[in-house]
Image (cartoon, rainbow, N blue to C red; front, side):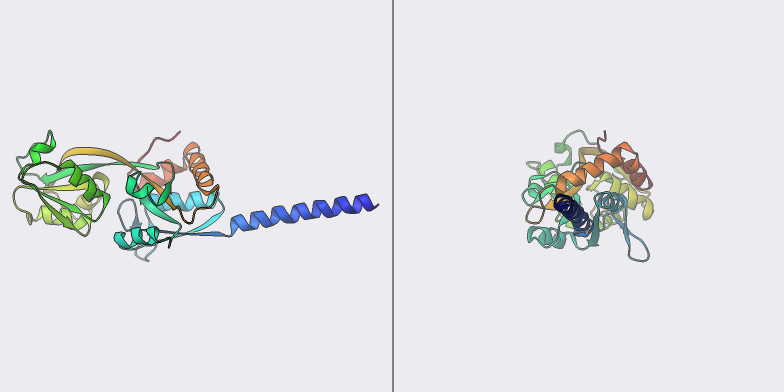
Length: 260
């Protein structure tokens, strides 16, 4: 009888421990920061964040039994928040030394590229960075777009780099001729496609693609717990296999990164 009671107590204790672990997992609250970056990250009329990267994050968090919230802010502030340990993660990360220094990175999720844009009547042709000698290059920053544009024209003579606060401003000013006749915009191709259509900038054309890239999620090193990144990546793998990644990315017209 005593053995039976002891066994019953042990079994009850085990059930309580499992229930407690499940409750702990379900109650994990994670706070992510980002910036508005259409079509990857958008905002509807009610102020709710949307876009492919937000939709994918929410589904991955649901499958991981996490309660994830996302706040959009100025990009510089978002990066500062991460570096100071004020958020659990960053939406819209790239695999770059600047990001790996402070974040553990998830698997790549979406594929994109950087490109050069000019007015449709521009005679400029592009084969190599030297073709940009003497040109004004407009880009938004501070950002990895700015970093990559600077690398592209490093050592090229006479380049005037103009930095704006957002990609839309870059493209609108280019279309309006605000940078002069020898101007080129450096932009993410999906972002340029979005704003050219959204703002009716039909007098712009893509000059060349200069670099391919992928976007993923960053988890703040000072806050990430053991096993969290593995859990998140497992959720992404499951979403890849059942087609959820493709379904959530489709409305934005953005390509998936390698998914298998």
